[in-house]
Length: 451
Image (cartoon, rainbow, N blue to C red; front, side, top):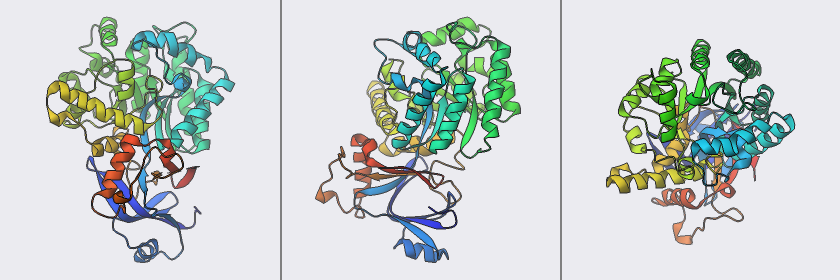
């Protein structure tokens, strides 16, 4: 795509809107310098749409192949970049022993810049190939390695929030911040470095206290104050595991709850993203809603580590935005498509227990959560998450007949311009598809993946 020209994308387009999906068999989107300048939901052709908008010089991306459609890029609201080599490795452990057995030793090894370069290059490449155009990354405690993750996201073209993990208590001596002052210095250095890249539309810093048990009250209070003064995003974990919740109560007895622990230290803001949130009480949910925080639902991880079942319908019924997180490597898959599929199935297990069909999520809902829901949770929905005029063009072309495609399409399912056939193919993609079906990925209008 040339910077001086408009590019018109023409063909089948699927777009999240109002917690559902728009199925548009023949539509056109105009993109100039990474931004959507028009969106015709019903179009005769690329040239007809361009003429309607007085555009004479344009390139065309024809998506009108019978089994191909355009979909917004996925947003991964919770992923641990240094844990990528451990994907699929969790043995018989649950959260707290998994951290000490598998996670802390691996993360500590990324102090070596060569290891960090290798791991981070691969995880960014892999997530992009799976259609993830934006990711909220946890790095490690190491300053230089965290800077390297930001550099790699920028060089490979992925939009990202990058956070240095803060831990100054209850973690192994070989892998923790040496002191509160050292933690403050490290956080400031990472934030200032990412800001110095001067790419706020592409890479943002995010303050990252790992979770309350690994952080002293002193450092959490400083982080809350620092984030609010500098208008920074915050990410952390909450109520993932019952043992973890009991531990927080023991460590912070003056706080009414896990959520209140963060609140009393200034960490619950409208730019805060809380991962897991399986066991939040109604009182805690009221607090989260009042503070306008977002949540990240990590269904694969919650199942893999037997942490519990997130009640998605309960959250959707409230004014609390949430998206999906792979939670690599507690979650074994770096794919938001797989995460959406698992999230739909977890909601059915919740419904089987409650005997209430309303607890089930639909295909439309989980794919909304995979895109616009994640943008809303990160407070980035004015820029990304769906196709709308004025938003950035982050997209993936889905082709259900690529070489080796796991999806079989039959003649009677075509053409997708008839009836609900496009909707049926999107359903098949959710349940049967994988990264082989993601043929092209664009971030900010730039083509970053071509298969």
